[in-house]
Image 1 (tube, rainbow, N blue to C red):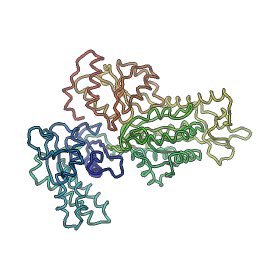
Image 2: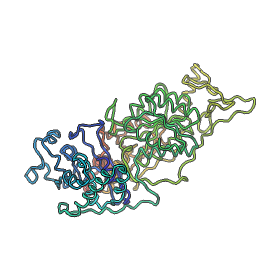
Image 3: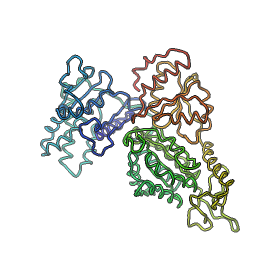
Image 4: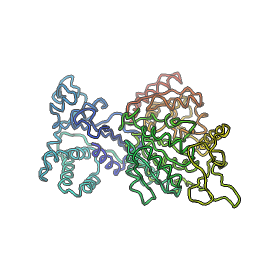
Length: 613
């Protein structure tokens, strides 16, 4: 199903639609087939206009077995189309899914749970096996092509171009002609079935979206983030070194970076999380751009080493692709619950800048920004992505080189004769210390995890010096705010009394919810934070403009806590921790309720209920 969804997405991207995807799959390597926990799904929302989310309620569901039907039925709106592969609705599979009887047998009966939907019963497996029988495959291998039959049918229903998928299958199975031809034949058979059968009386036309000029490609968050790290290395003229250990959902960054040795990228798959970050810090000490990637459990293990990078004041980009926790938690599901860990998850006063992308494509820019901060301010930087951004995709406009910031590593140079090199002297603007790679005459200095004496970097246990160094490291992080642009606030009318503020992947659901409220005729403002430590300098003033501040998060209120503590604002949290993105319709209702309270009016969102997103 992941392959099917990915191919439909690529077809739509080639056609020119705007789109957002939501892959959703089990954590187990081999999840129990036919059970609800074993359901793998791929949701795609595409349109002829700008969209922000993968959609709250799918209009079409393709259910390959009873478990897929049961797991997703509750998300469908009334009147949605359901295409069911009848072949797998056996008693054994029905029992696995928890059905006492076959729901397809009750179609047309009063009280049928499927009565509110347009159900199309199709023997996808049987027709696929019949279509590919000329290639001599076993029935099991032949049946595996049913996903391509389903893709062909959906491609016909929505007028998707077929050439990209045909070319993909030709390349993917180039070494096995029978498998290649069987999949292409199944794909074409699905298209032809839609074209010739009278089962599907409606065909949809979704025209290309109007987008700003440029070259676009479909991209996932992990891929965009990897490209951003490469761009950060190019813009700083530094070799990129990735020291890491595979972990869901961050592993794809390692896989991608390993392909780009031509850009000066070195990847090292270490024996564990601690070794990975240790190697990255060593690379930074040697004058490279050190990067380590992981998820929440890995951040817990890397904590002491990140503190070492704070103490030694070396550039380091720490990527945390957040997932459900605690402990192993929900490895393939999304969550935003590592913000406080990023802020405070180290011993001692160890401040770390925190940056978060807002969409899959924005992961590129966020990664470049993390590299800029790390190199310019000589500090580890935490980059907080999450599973929704990492695996989801959207059209991304490829930026020009002139749009990328120049990043100056400004390596230290040997002091003049008779002068002493001071490895912990400070740049007056950034408070960054000199970056002095080993092997340069005149730049010899002590380095390590024990407290440094101001200026000289010698080991110091002096209480006053420790207090001074703690404050200097904090002031250096605070100084980053001076380089940040003013925070953008979307408040078209200028009369809103409610501000919705978020961070990370909630950008899409919040934006879609805000659109619904505005379409119904009400005023609401929105802003979204990329920089979470330090906050933008104008954030406090912005928060004071509004009577009510709503903070939707996929945690129990971590940003709300930080805003309350720093700005003494009565931030109101809307919090879900379900392993799934927030829903736009739910947020619209919450926002509408706050608008009603703030303005003392009745709010009716009915005019916006048909809003496409």
